[in-house]
Length: 321
Image (tube, rainbow, N blue to C red; front, side, top):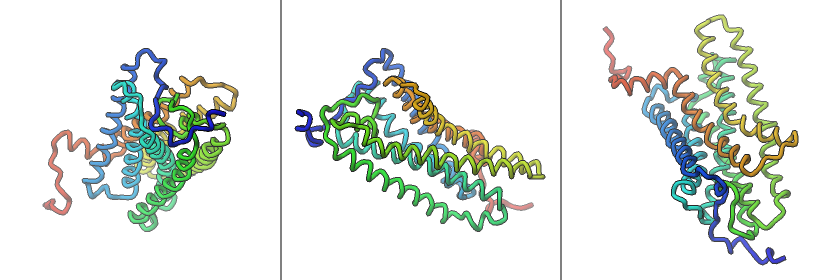
């Protein structure tokens, strides 16, 4: 076949064509730009508030910071491409830029999942064995676990990118809306089905491994909360756990919808697939900082102090009368 004469070295750039059939490209581009700016603003506020307040240098807030960093990376890799295509009308993405965006996009996807798992475990320990929580969950151990999740993500993506980088490409056209593993494999002159084994295993791990584990964790938490006698503690735990659940379902819902529709025989068009991908890539990263800013008492209080221009006095400087 003539396509066999092409190698990966022949491709210097890709053309993104996933938006070509849309009429209101500028409007969609503006909405994506607005969403991206809100993601940066919300996650940036969380990072600034937590990093500048020593009283928030605790495991749970370190995990929130980790999730904020992941959200910024995850949304940036896809948003910048879509904004460039829709608003700047620059459809060309260099080969190595596409490879790097693919790497960091899926790295973000993997680390978000593991970050949510760590947060669920943190809350489980806090509620089930509160007296031992501070001795078990320390800042150093939290940093170690976060580093481990990133190391796992880097390792998995090293394998995935080596696959993408070694397939031959017949034409430099990506029919999707940004660079990711499926779009690059479908642009290659190979039978894509064997190459989707990696993504199938990843989806199986996320949806049949991590997700049920997290749900079981919160089921145990819900049972434990109902047995608390102190109404104040009960309300606080319910508020904290509900925040985590909102974040959890905002991440998994688009993935579950896509998988379920496929399983019941619904064939999604390219436009539908692109729409699900955009929602799955941007909505969770927008919801996460909003939830933690509005529902976490310490962050909400600190944010109110900043906007109301209250002078915040450290505890060691306060004078006891």
